[in-house]
Length: 463
Ligand code: SF4
Image (cartoon, rainbow, N blue to C red; front, side, top):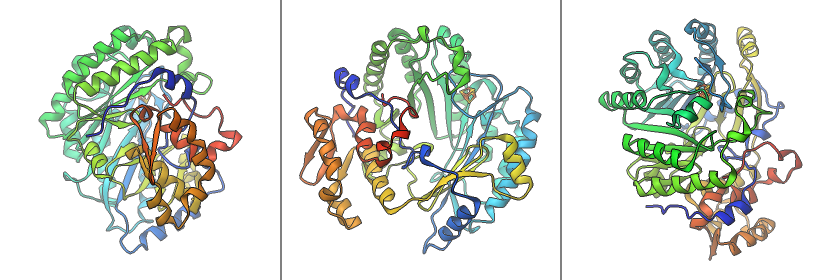
């Protein structure tokens, strides 16, 4: 089993700086508008022509929420009226129809995810209609070896909602909680009792949802070491299979809802680090395995198993045990990854509607990877998923002399080695326990786009 990261405050303070989260390489900030719908169509065609085409992963962005959380950085529409979702769903159905024609119909959907916003905002009828529409255009096969997951806000689930979702084929849920302390909840405008979260979890277990994730955030206003410790005790009591604990990045100039959070109410950087330190200790002591970058899972969870057997993968939904999928994104802002390349939809509801009405896919940007990108992507995937890099193996596979090709990068690791973040033994780079929390910094050494001046100021801090 992987060991917990070792928390060294002095190192964290020294290395902590803005950096990508590596849900893709290159990061989405490198996507550009030189990529068009016709590029995407070509990539889809090529993916169908592979000897054994990959299974599919479908992501649907449902951007509706009934109230605003002040920390939110997502692309969403705030409304209490479910009928507001109707025109969007009609557009989504048009997109499903167009996209489905690009991919061979016998390619199985191994992973399906509804995110947002709050996909649970949809009425039973709307969510059934959406799933029916998906299944009439793609080969769904709900079962235990697939991940069909949905993000839920317990405050907006209709009565019988969980069993309805199970009936639609979902076998995983991810529940937004963030913090259970009332003062924190009021300050971020998300008042959500422990009882309603517990009720959703009980319902999910009763109907056979086999994996439950809870999202938490540290660094929110009025959070203290003591208050977050209590939240964690209550969450551990609920026994979720996975816990994601994100760092709140206060960027009110970029995310207007955050202007309602006063900077002086936030824990200062040293208290925030104490909260993080104690949270990691507590979760590991409770039996959770540190997967990497904000994620914890029970040892028997699919993510922990995939990490142990070397098949863990990182993508736009975080960590995943399904490495070999082509992913298709539906809805505003959704990102797809077909073959080696990336594509992103417009973030504007109006443009999304207009493009689809004219029979076009609402593509606004993307990225066509070059060989050097793929090589560096593999290195970064190995580091973020397995905390280890086999330089000899990578060199052989890519036909390069690793030491020569990455001479500058290897020199850039010297200080990290002296600080005990990594260890270089033979042909391997091993991320040491104190380096696990700083793995983004280690990856950044191999990220050629981080050396470009425009990347400054685009990312949250690494810890
Ligand atoms: S945090 Fe989630 S539920 Fe809250 S406003 Fe943002 S998308 Fe909606």
